Length: 219
Image 1 (cartoon, rainbow, N blue to C red):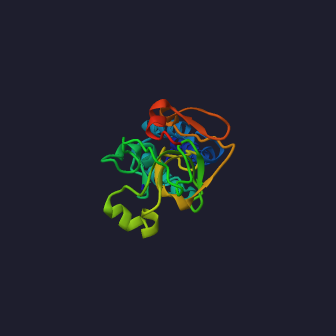
Image 2: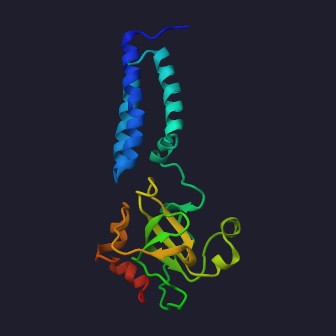
């Protein structure tokens, strides 16, 4: 079995230290994604200077280290892999589903407890976010509702929410019924798409841009 030379040993030790450093970054920074991406690119670049044998050792070490630190999914997330089944990516919204209909909501029924721009938290998943749209009743594919919804959840208002990237690293949207949400105050949300929907944060909620306000005139 080939043995590592001194140079390879030093390089592998240095690279191995990067893995727990990734883990620390993901918890210490509000915007860890760009930093983690840079670290991963550095790690990949360093492999060019390793021998074939030491490179194989490095790949084995990284796989194990990322597994025990919980980082095994970061590469896929940074590369744009689809999120968990219950979470929606904005690019997949279509066919007037998931609050994507362009028909203005001129009526607000009493059971609609939140408005676009409200900052909320999912009571069970502890995900913070801001409401960017809503439907009077759940508008989603039948298979989606069958797998993830109870009957009463589908018959109540449902909201499209931009999830804070501190709670979900990969920028995501989620669609959830009214009963799962609680209003938050004095909380700003971090999400790369907020400027598309809102003009500014007034201290209690996000003020929608004119095009979004026109979609929800009573909000």
